[in-house]
Amino acid sequence: MSRFTPLRIALGLLGMFAAGFVALGLVGWGTPAANEQAIGEISRWCERVAAGLLREPVNTLGNLGFVVAGLAMFATLARDEATRPLRRNAFTGNRPLAVLYASAVLFLGPGSMAMHASHTRAGAWIDNVSMVAFILIPWLVNLAQMGRWSDRVLFTTYGVLLGGYAAGYWFIGPELGVGLDLFGISIGLWAISEVLHRWHSPALRPLSGLVGFGVAAVFGLTPAVMLSDPGGHWWVVLFWIPGSLARHPPPTRRRYVPWFWAGVASFAVAYAIWLTGKADHPWCAPDSLLQAHAVWHVLSAAATWAFFLFLRTEAPLAGAGLASGATAAAGHEPRSG
Image 1 (tube, one colour):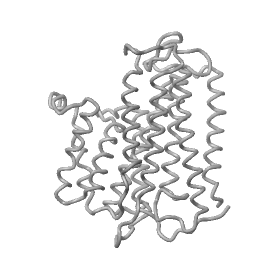
Image 2: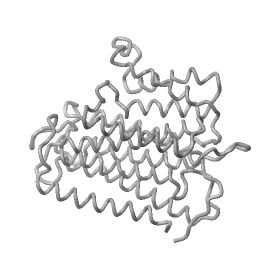
Image 3: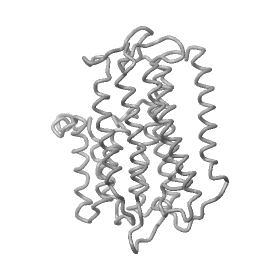
Image 4: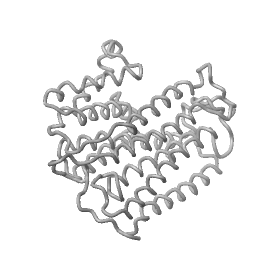
């Protein structure tokens, strides 16, 4: 297989998406979702709803940031394959995890475009599935390392969670009928598992779930709010999943400066801007070419690139065995093409 094969496949799939996107747009996209506004009104994400191919033109095109980031990752992985020897890192070269991460980032672009361009239920479904497809990866990789999972277990778990979410969203609803925001809880699980990856110890494992409350508070969901409605916030028990499964210290170490913190900062700024990009916000300017939600897309794409570079800093600890491709693949020889 040529080292450019994943990149070529990605470009081919993008071309197919573009063709289908334009074809559906030219026939009017179909019935809009019940929660979307009519043409001429202000959308949920501030931009005025337009007729034609794109219901929210600026917000839709802002997702090109994810396309650029994803293609840049595929190009970087192809370049890695020409390096001898390839570094012992699961996010270098055309290794399964590296390709999965780049694919998930690329998928974020068309996924969100489908929602902002079409205003249909199917578009919203694809958008949410793409977000979950990305956010599952970092915390599952962390658990795979600390739980000594095989590649088969890691990818099977990923597929079951993503497939279950996609089916549940479509047939039941966004919160799967149980009040579960899988994307939101996954941000907390990533933070918890990252703390365990960095400072793993037997004493930290049972306490690590508390990190989730700190993450929730950053997004405005304080313990006081949770206590006022414990049934509606039952999912806090999931904060202890990483600690219960992280039975072993990670066999690798990552460098957090600068790329991890650059990713966190980019996402934090993006989220702050996202809060202003709503129809009821005083800063909403529905006819402006600068839309807050489009900026959110671009900065979030920058965050995925920063986290990609962060994961590529991972290196095996001296004397630590590499249990699976989730930690890194040793002895891989790059292929020419």
